[in-house]
Image 1 (cartoon, rainbow, N blue to C red):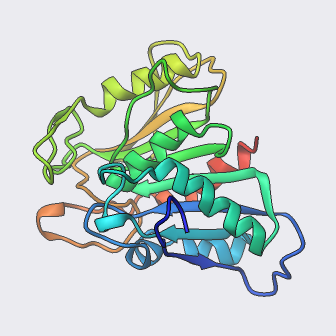
Image 2: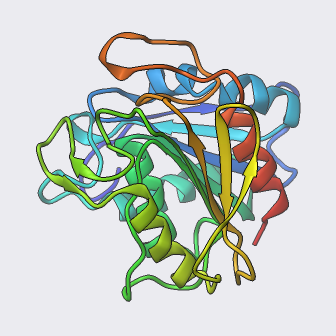
Length: 251
């Protein structure tokens, strides 16, 4: 129960975990119109969690959405969710992380701003909000985005599902660089023939984003959904990179 509403989520627990040892938790938020079960599978975090031994929680948004339902505070819900999982297991409070796809990316980025005391690091995919003066302390932040994304356009424009405006990834990442105390201009590093990592320097908290040339509105390393969502790169795995980033950035 959160805010007087019954909420649901999937929780992956690695085999053999006895519930008493401190364990990391990755919050995994689905995109608009999806649900926790689909995101649980699509993100490919569960096989990784089995190998690396961490919890994965994939919650369901009200009306299959985050941050848009009147009278629903998804930031408070996330706090309630972590508290519930901590009651059932032994969550390492310094290793709670967040990621998400599209609308779930917006959600995980919002947590970095409004719940930086809860999440140690975030890694949104194909969606993000910017930092602003209402945010708390610096939070390690990486994002993944395709330049061919027609739903949440990389350079900015109209958001496909809602018709609202989107400022664009470069502009929004600049707000995170400023918030996290970084130098203004990122340094580019080629990860593959189609992927570049733009990493900001001299930060109080690590900050950067993976740019997939021609990539669609998709999760790098996931199954290729095709159609209007565009191409899915297999050059990198967002799940693997996000987890390595999380491991390197406990609170």
